[in-house]
Figure (cartoon, rainbow, N blue to C red):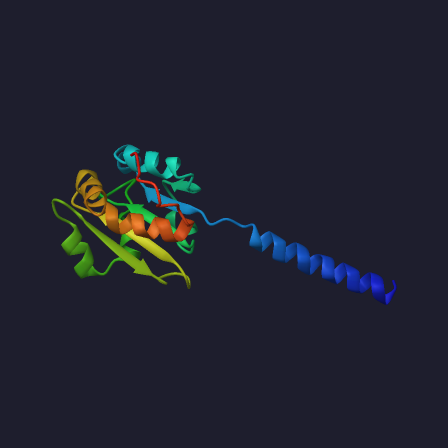
Length: 158
């Protein structure tokens, strides 16, 4: 194989890899149980209206814990809950302060991977976690705008 062909092949591979990276899109991973997902219909409508690419994860949470953008819809404890995942994300103090009526939102950065942001909505149950999500909309919305370069020049109709 001539020197020119080898150089062309290497350049083609490098260009292909760089183009693939340039066109790779970030995705939002939503972690929750079915009850918390059912309570978040308005949230999913907002994400859909903004064309935010997402994946919903209802089990095997450890498989996505190194993803760049994660939102945890917390709530109930026990089988089928996100409790074990939340234990890896929040401190004992944070879990205690969030485990109450009204719930609470937490933001964790660079926890499992560099450049990662995890938003956790927690509460004594799914209703409290949903209330925390609704009450902290301005905060989490700013993250979504930044992550997905959303156009905020027009008021949201939803």
